[in-house]
Length: 211
Image 1 (tube, rainbow, N blue to C red):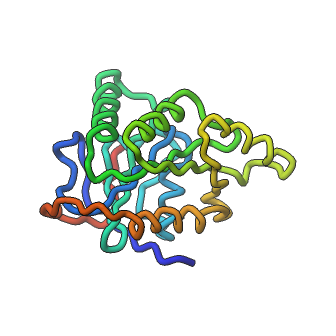
Image 2: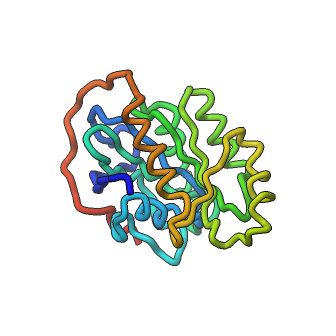
């Protein structure tokens, strides 16, 4: 298994609260019920790195995780399902849009979509944002363990509008996790543009409980 050393660094409620460092950031984005936290834990082989919950939408901040010496994962709040006050939903949406549009450290987006449903309007919008900014796009089709073998070809065809071949992933069986891990780590080796060095925030052990 490829080494993927990750630890929680900090959370942010807005762009100006994001960490000031020279790390290359890879955003992890998807619906609230897509299994984002479970997949993040599987990537790092650390069951408690990102808090999981039976109630979708617990992640309501931008959570940053250090990966090795030069990379960072930005776990974005989920969208499309979580129940919350409209004012908070608008705040979270604005923070995500600003981060994706203006964050200079951002180099790639991993877009998660349920393998059984495929991408919808929000996922296609994320892909469009990535294209406008020239960001690399990785598509992960989550919960593929719930597909029958006979359903897999049709599931992959549903991702055709993304124009990126999906990686079938399962946090339960581990399928696709190593492939996704390697794709993310390769970004750190391939990225040539230096980032301005800034002060690193105080570190913590894992993402906070946002319930």
